[in-house]
Length: 111
Image 1: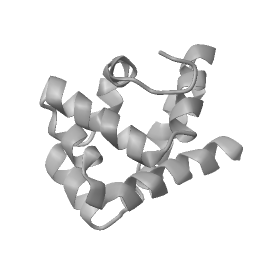
Image 2: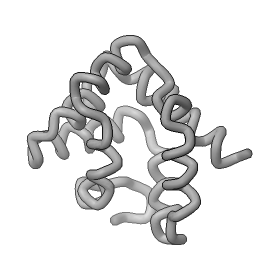
Image 3: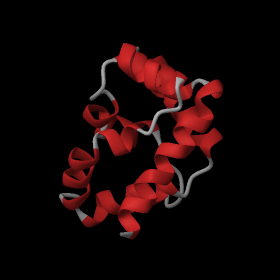
Image 4: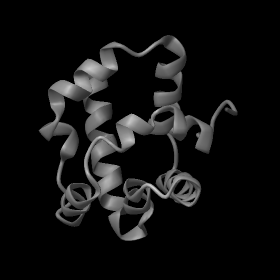
């Protein structure tokens, strides 16, 4: 991974996290611009507390990345894996959903 950009290999490393929610539910949440981080707060908190320093660094890169760049990586992940969750997260119409949920993760980290 480069110092300041997330890559497909990074996404692949966390595939379980990105595919935790079934695609039909993820799309429903995305259409409603739901706060899924809040809905799964205890699981997210548990995940955050177990991050290694390297994983924390990668998370910081994600949280500080441009949403369009993140969605481009999600599009690449979908092309390589055919996982529908990546296609949903790459969809430009769900940009506000991606932004708001990343904001929620940022808030959790700051607490």
